[in-house]
Image (tube, rainbow, N blue to C red):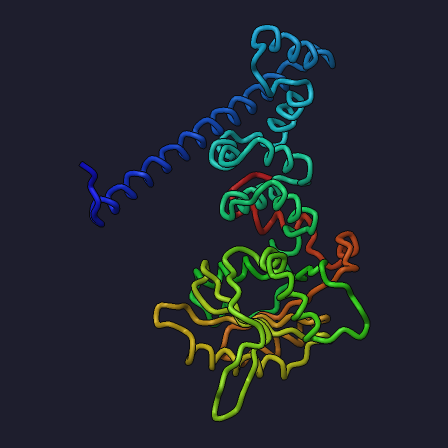
Length: 341
């Protein structure tokens, strides 16, 4: 006899979820064991350098003879194992970080990151955001670590937001944002940039970061019988708040902060649910003087950050002089991971 009622189907869904969770844990378990094995093999290779350059060649050949069906023990992969053990010498990091994602992600990080703090920062993004390999490569290519780990931020978030939300918002803000899918033109205006961001919303959301959900552009609010239009309105599911983004095609001006402050008051009054956190604002300008922005935000009573953006002629290397140094980043991240740099 078939059971066909809501209570049964609720129970069925719970059982199915438990099965999926167990399957996922099993996959993670297999991955974890593989990563630990690769790291230990890497250590063996390092500890036996006295055998010379042919050691890895011989090891790959003999493993294949004894385990003909086993994959992952080529000369190339054994060299990655050695590199893995060299760069990540702490077994605790291997178990708690590296083993949480695929070997392909690990080899990409080994190839494309220049320090342990950079490796760990991107590893956190892979774990927390569930980044695919291509998404990880894209973020590394656009130097997200340098732009987001310690960007030159001008905000009043610390003063106005609860500590947890401030930490999350601070991690979200970049300097600069890179919209490399929009062609730079001297005469380009805000509305054109806005239209391109909306037309390429998937790429826009990828650059903004995790948790952003697009609500609308030129979002209409009526205040005191007058009409106002927000350039871009988002809701961030991690921050649990509305995010208003205003675009400016030129240099930052102090009056922009006042206008965005007004918009945030209206959003908090008309849209914010009682369970939501305070709405935040982001002013994106072509140019921004950090000191001017800080003065403009000093007496503003709504949380606002001011950052710059770059369009399609952006070349990551050209930002080298404006990004924080490796030493600055390492000092900042050292405390988080409690590592000896």
